[in-house]
Image (cartoon, rainbow, N blue to C red; front, side, top):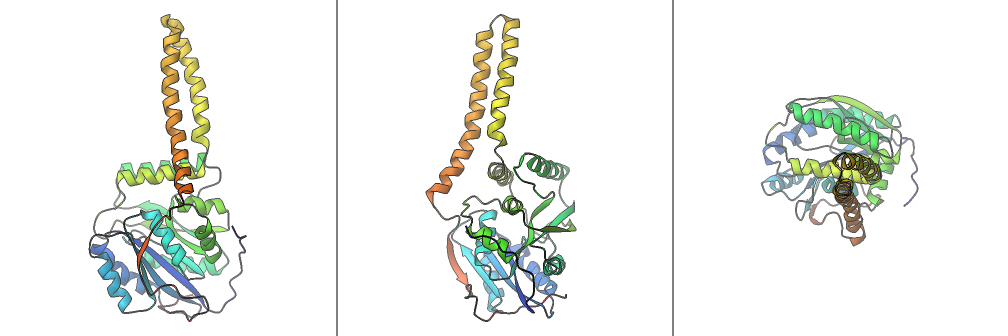
Length: 324
């Protein structure tokens, strides 16, 4: 893996790629594109390109993306062969991004495109990572807000490195960070964890997350659990180590209970089997993650490209510029 060199922003004009992973967003995508193009308003120092990543949509999402791209060469797109998942869609966009910096933002308008110019201004000041921190989550139930609050703090507590609290994948990443993530070879990328692991200079801008403008969340309970599992497995060895402590404590408790009931052997055996089952399950998760890595399969397959990435020396298409 190449070493990272963080360079100061000295160029008179820089390109920022805005990556939007999409999965069945037909009902909201036209409004998203309209707000995005208005937010990326003209300026002198920064030009933008928009990169849509269709993660195997089955509705009219790709047709809309084709329509947007037909009106501007600065609107580019990837179409994946099937639904590989949100993190794979983000990674596909990062690998394809041509910008000096890249912003990842969801297409459902819960994250405001209008915040991007402020993030770019922070990047221009020298920050390698600009994360958007949620101060509120409108339109989400108490259980969702509570579980998200708890998850980030538990993850930060058990992780081998600090993890930014209350931040999702809505971030601006310097070219050096994008190249690092693209070259990592992590087939089960947990984007926010990998960014925190890098430990590069990071600042935050705060915002209140809006309800979805239209449609339903594509993050089902199963997908949220999978993302949570990936975050824990990729960032901490604590679950494996915890089984030893749990096993010892359980054995001690079972031994005491067995002595009271005058059947210590049965109690110890039952407890040991339970602890063994938990330990095997936890270890199995790490073994499965290792298997996925050594299989060497790509994390996504690109079916189609619109306005594919050009060599670095080629002229850049300019959609709009930052206000700063």
